[in-house]
Image: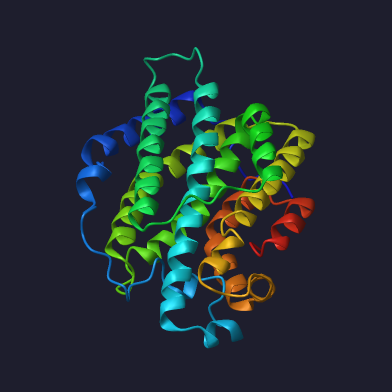
Length: 302
């Protein structure tokens, strides 16, 4: 598969995009500590995320669960996803900061990159406070995933780094667009989702532009290598989104819940749907190679 990107992309293209993004930041940004009603009581009947996004929705086990168990499960699932978001946002911040090290601080690229890092710091604090408000402790990724993340943030550069960033942001973006509109979802989750969606849309635009710039004119070997690395990063991120311990927290048989979640065709369809725009972009970049697509299939993104 070959890239359809324009090989004549210039530095001014990226500068124009970043300048527009900085204007957007000035026009519309949020302070989560002020925008979220942290003191509002939590309605015991409201979910942590739209039930349709639960990993068990549509399974036999879901049908057996009490309404209280369903609410509890979705709250733990959303906190697990938020915890994974914090983990990857910390990786993201280090990669972006390294990418901009000793760059031209007068450029719009540099200034938006640092703005993105500031956004991510606020988002991480927002997610952490949301989980604490729901009375749920952070879910930590598996040890192997932590070490793989450590390696990725240290070694990934250029299109691979921004590709990994884009994967994490795109998947969560589709989910949160549903959560922010969910009438049966906690207002706390709806508001934090809205803030994240609005501000991450700028981050995704920046990541796409950085990828276009870095992909222009690269060798086939480098493109194929980046494609596989981005896919592996996606697998690590997605496989850690919902920690297996969320099922025990809802009073469920953990082993049975893990089996049913793994075979839940409804959730597989939701994941493929949420990944359509991302896969189209990666294909356009020449980054949806056969080996990469095989990795994405293991997590139901294609």
